[in-house]
Each structure stands twice: as C-alpha cells, then as structure tokens.
Length: 69
Image 1 (tube, rainbow, N blue to C red):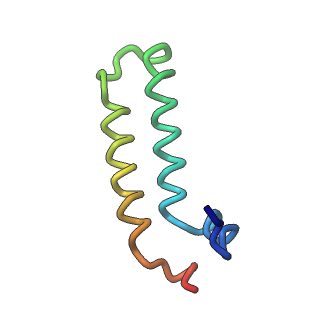
Image 2 (image 1 turned 60 degrees about the vertical axis):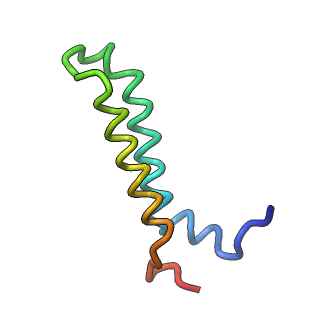
C-alpha cells in the first residue's frame, strides 16, 4: 500500500474525507444522545450516518477542482 502524492492536500480539501468525519461524529452521537436527550428516535443517527457515508462514497468518485492533479 502506498500513499498518493498529494495526501496532505486531499486530507484538507476532499469532500469525501469531510463527509467521513461527519459520519464518525454522527456515530458517536448515536451512542451519547440517548443519555442526553431520551426523545431522539432509535436509529435516527444510524440512518443519518449511513446517508452521509453514501454521500462520501459518491464524493470520492467525483473529480474535485481543488485537488485535480
């Protein structure tokens, strides 16, 4: 396995990375939120996280002007 040449730029600018971070935050909220706000429907954060992961998958396949090589 080898890192791409522009890996630092990709970490800063790629939407797929940003969306994966959002998905991670939503997954964490899924664990914490029931203790803080019991009125949140079960599985809501899991559904939102899944949608964001799907968006990250699509974003990974699209060319992004800020990181074209």
